[in-house]
Amino acid sequence: MGIVLCESLVGMICPLTEWENNLRVRGGQDQVYETSFIREWIHKIMFFFYFSELTFVIVYSLFFALILFTFKVIPPDLRKRAGKSIDKY
Image 1: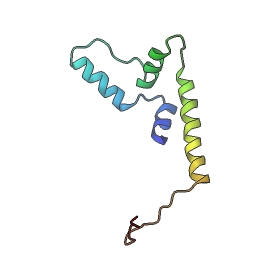
Image 2: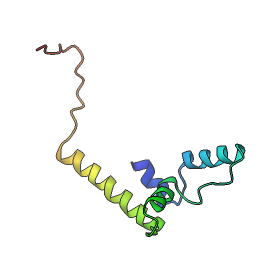
Image 3: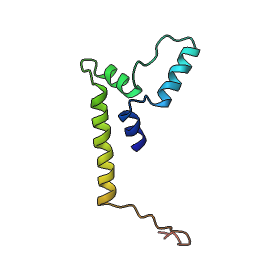
Image 4: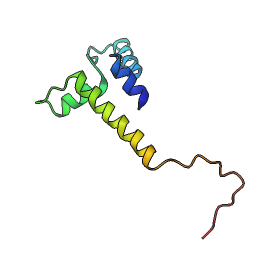
């Protein structure tokens, strides 16, 4: 999520979206995404709304903050469990 946030902050389109666009053009299709994949599909699903790139940056930032908050409140157990047996029922 941090990578997605950084890409959106610098205005970079996801490399997978660019790859898909290139493959579509090479395959003879005319339709390519003008912006990001997510923005295109949200616009198609909810055609009466137009969300700016800033909206997605804000959503990505809030979601990333939620992830960091979750790790702070419920830290993952990073200790190795090698050598411990699995309890059988």
